[in-house]
Length: 350
Ligand code: NAP
Ligand code: ZN
Image: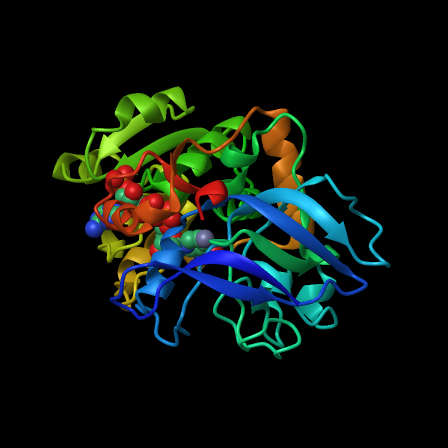
């Protein structure tokens, strides 16, 4: 076993504090990573504040991890000491079920092991539940480690490990590309990466944000149109327009208003995971044969495909680099939609 410095939330309403955690011994298939950067995803906040229930404390979040390989186990073939690597939301899955065999490990029917807050044997993580990237080191099976291509900085690559794949996967699944009208609701961490990826895929991209405050940024990132959802006229003007709408909003939304913006056979994909259920009126789905769907991150192979795609298109997240003692205030700013566009913790400050 080895120790690592980390920042942990002691309870749902306690402030983050510096702690020392243990990591397992590097096994034959394991990679020890010196973490350089960890993005702050809104899911970290939902979990650490126990908005989804079931949080384990002390809670060390973080599933947008970028760093350098510090040691490898005897059977590791993919990585060497010094390699630039990332870890996303998944650190294990059964490897045998239908989704795992299809490369969709995030939908493992025997229960994927998330990078933090999942119960595991003490041999996998001392303490009995996973602890994430707000720490200086992590030990991960090589199958769940991604290679970060040269050409993307580790700091702007970190958020791609969750935000990037969470948008890339549904954009590919629902064939975003030339001739397709795609709307992205919310210009936050997920949304801004989604704008860049959808534009690079060749789709006609519209941002639906609460206000026009971030319009110039959205257009610079590749959006073709930008509308404020605080303006009722937006919903009248855009009725029946889109082939695909991707909802990245972390709060409750009037879903019916957005369903009516879909064209014939259009799909509204839910990515945002607020704590309350949402309501949908049947006739807004039935009309124009619309679909309401969801999507959860992406599998390991597709995450690597996404990183390679982003590197070849010059896509990284737009970040505000913070020190570890700023995590609490960063959380408050994310919840207030005051982030441009992802906070990333500099692990040197942990
Ligand atoms: P984020 O950075 O906070 O972005 C969310 C954006 O939603 C905000 O920037 C804001 O954009 C908009 N928004 C916030 N409150 C709103 C409100 N009351 N009404 C309307 N719009 C509002 O969060 P994130 O990290 O991108 O994550 C977004 C959600 O996705 C979270 O619920 C997270 O848990 C979930 N998530 C899901 C997956 C998955 O696999 N499905 C993966 C990662 C995260 P504007 O200012 O532009 O309006
Ligand atoms: Zn995330």
